Amino acid sequence: MSEEILRAEILTPDAAEFLIALHENFDNLRRHLLIKRRSRAAEFAYGSLPHFNADTESVRNSEWTVAPLPRDLLDRRVEITGPAEPKMIINALNSGAKVFMADFEDSLSPTWQNILTGQSALKKAVRRELTYTNEEGRVYRLNEKLATLVVRPRGLHLEEKHFQIRGQAISASLFDFGLYLFHNAHELLRRNTAPYFYLPKLENQEEALWWDDVFRFAQKRLALSVGTIRATVLIETIAAAFEMDEILYSLKDHVVGLNAGRWDYIFSLIKKFHTRPDFILPDRQSVTMNESMMGAYCRLLVQTCHKRGAHAIGGMSAFIPNRRDPELTKNAIAKVAADKKREASLGFDGTWVAHPDLIAVAEFEFDKALGSEPHQKNYKTSYHVREEELLRVPPYHGRITEEGIRSNIEVSLLYLDNWFSGMGAVGIHNLMEDVATAEISRSQLWQCLHHRVILADGRSFVPDLYHKILNEVVHKIIPMQLLHLDKAMTLLNNLVLASHFEEFLTLSAYPILISMESKGEEYVTQRRDAVATARL
Figure 1 (cartoon, rainbow, N blue to C red):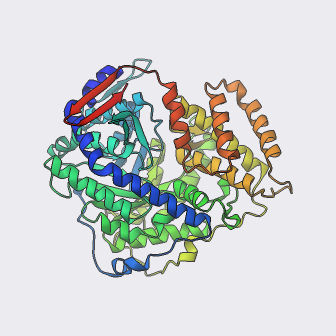
Figure 2: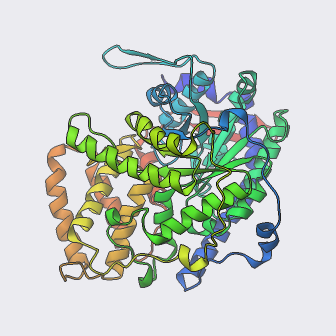
Figure 3: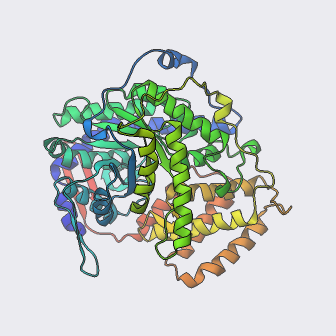
């Protein structure tokens, strides 16, 4: 569909008015919260560690619960995730999973076309009007029975440069959330469901309170009852792991659960403590959920959620089947089954998968644990998770290899090439890679290089060795005829060799993506003294 048609459908004057109102009421505080993030990150860089906040001890120790959960979010034993793209939306809603998370964040490359197409597809899906025809003429349609739809907007640190208000880009969080809510809230209610969201990358209760205020304002503006909007919060930063109770409490009229976003959580550990040699992690593939720090994180999340009447949702194993290779598929299924068995035994109420063929695998393990019950909220433990358990990183000595370095370089280059091509979720070597896993790869390279780690073979990882391995990887992948390898290489070198650790790779990659998009006409809507500009 052309951008002009998408613009007319999605960026209507009324929708733009709603976005302007969100921006005017909440963007200044969002920017302030980001400044506070950076200030705390600097404290970590100079040796500070996160703690359970003594000032909010009363919240952790008092008795309270979140609002009762909606009927269609009671059973979430298997959730499938993927980018908000028409074919993915249809296949995921039809997949047999209980929930589909349509993603505008880590698994979607945020081209303007992708963002508008995603909003249009979701609008049609809500109304059961979405179809998709592939190049061979095959038509995809929605079934009668569908998964419950949940939408993940982009994180607070990101902006949507194509929609500007008085020359200032709107928050990507507000843009994604606002458009989906504006176009679909009343239609969802008419169909006996409601607007449901996943909130990514929150770091503390202040950011949760920001979202709660956004929800209350939006509900009042659209004549919706308080609590119509319901959200699941991803606990995918090390700072948020110490404020789970506080986050639930701040959103208690709107929250339904927490999710253990494992990949961003590992990335967050590297990012927050990138200056510290005692937080160097071993090869990415060896940092599993069996590490003690990951086990403590999961136990605390389940324990906190169940105490407060909320759902605890597990994370996503990166292994995916390969329909052309039965042995690889068998291996992937075995690893995913073990991962889901572990989560179910810990008391999680549900889990994520990234591929339809893995739904039955995850469902089998959770069916054994849940039986006929929709969740495991009666599963409660009294185990006390200590602060030091959440920060006990696995030893890296002898566990950082040239193979691991080579894999990080290759994954970074291949993923960035796909991201610049408009694809945000990519299968690489039978693993599903998205921004979160690419972040781990590039941040481990920075970590190893700037701490001059000693590899398992005794060599020191220095710039000369990095360039040598990089050149070998590039030589290997050149026959793939990648479209944006030069851009990917330049960006990776800038991220890895810079003395400063870049907070998010997308903050550097997004301007490149924008520059690649063709310039067109401007869409302008005026309201009194406000001007919103959507550059198409």
